[in-house]
Image 1 (cartoon, rainbow, N blue to C red):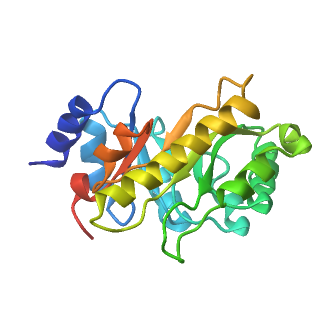
Image 2: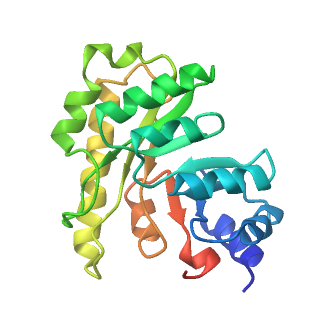
Amino acid sequence: MSIGSKIEWLKKELPPGVKLVAVSKFHPAEAIWEAYQAGQRIFGESRVQELTGKQKALPSDIEWHFIGPLQSNKVKDIAPFIHTVHSIDSLKLLEEVNKQAARQNRIIRVLAEIRIATEENKHGFTPLEAKDILNKENINSFGNVQICGLMGMATFTDDKTQIRKEFQLLNALFKDIKSSTFKDNGCFNELSMGMTGDYLLAMQEGSTMVRIGSYIFGNR
């Protein structure tokens, strides 16, 4: 199947309300263009230098999502155009995104990354840390970021029971935070979880946004 055919198949497979982030990191602009021609507009990248090069080379109506670890000193390079940052894993990073968005007179959508996997190299807040940070009184004073939900990555394992439990944990945390801290905020509605190997499980457990790369573009 071509990249375009895979995009078309996925769009039919995903239920209403679930967005597809085509993870284009490490793949050339030509591959992204093929997906774009099939109607895909949301693409996920994880390296700032690679992303800025692609953003200049590709159509301006692409909705770029940053899905990897983001260094605070790199935020300024993507602040002029980035749509959503999935990987907010510290208050320092959130403050920097807000500062750089203000300099661009923009509002940048962000997701708090939650560490639900067992691997020690995974990034993100613990559930308790996330509640603490998002419950801070001054969190609403960040006028140039819009906290839209949570993101998490399950453990890389074939154990579907474990993966399901991790997605259930993230969904429960999402509902808890939404009903308490963000009960009057209609923007807190995104649960970004699920990749090529586990997106079906993720959707069953409440995902509103799946990040699929290798199925669409192949391995790199």
